[in-house]
Amino acid sequence: DDESLELIVSLTYLADHTRRIHFGSLVVPVSLRDPALLTRQAIALDDLSGGRLILGVGAGWQEREHHLFGYTLGDVPTRMARLEEGLEVITRLLRSEEPVTYEGRFFQLRGAALLPHPGRSGGPPILIGGNSTNTLRLVARYADLWNANFLTPDTFQKRSATLDQLLRTAGRNPGDVRRSVMLGLFFARDRSELERQLRETPGFTGQSLESFIEALKASEIAIAGTPDMILEQIHAYEQAGAEELMLQWLDLDDMEGLRAFAASVLPHV
Image 1 (cartoon, rainbow, N blue to C red):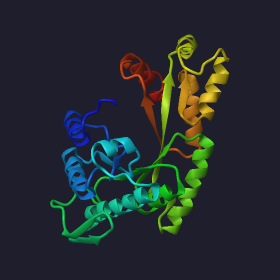
Image 2 (image 1 turned 120 degrees about the vertical axis):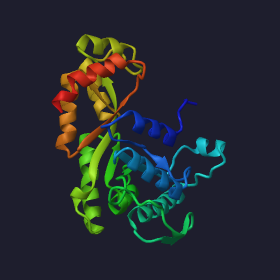
Image 3 (image 1 turned 90 degrees about the vertical axis):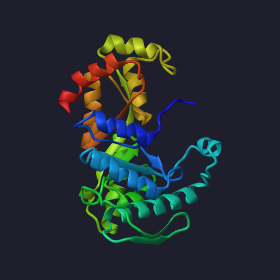
Image 4 (image 1 turned 90 degrees about the horizontal axis):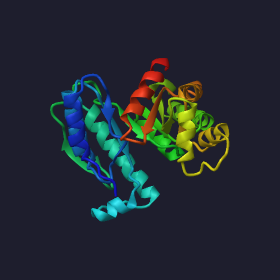
């Protein structure tokens, strides 16, 4: 079990200690948080931070976590139905000027209104993550941002084209939803450092550096390499239509490496 801080408290601290960055959840499962309360918290966080919150909402997936704390996760159809209802509650509360009544299987509203209304029209942008067609249907109906999880550029481009079709069916334009991809990041300052790191990596069994990097890219889990290698991979996602990348820095103790990545890569993207 990993240690972690409570989400809303942590984001409130982050809002108070920053001025420019946008921040949010990736993602809040409606199986664990009541969507009406979550919406109220999101409005407050967004207003207090000057409009910097991104509200990521999801169905939930960690069965053990739900069991330990007395929540029912359910099968995939149940999770998706509950997520759809949760998104309906959230979007109605964020975007309606009038009290909201809603009778669902999982959630109900009876003349509910959240006051004050959101400071920015429609409230914070809603992010939905996932790759399945059922998830993309919900993105097309409710989301402002879509975050794909661990896809190659080619697969991302195909999923993005599916989303375009679903958006048109829903009466929206493809440009209405901003697209991002979440990937792991395996960074080294130069080739010799990369080789040293890879020798300590499970699965690196004496193969060439280039073949290992290609295998990582094909696995859909990470971008990897030196600054030049990483910039080439970032460009491939940009060409596929990704507007943002969410990169997971896996070694949280290596702050010097993170600073080196920021200095050598970010100025070129």
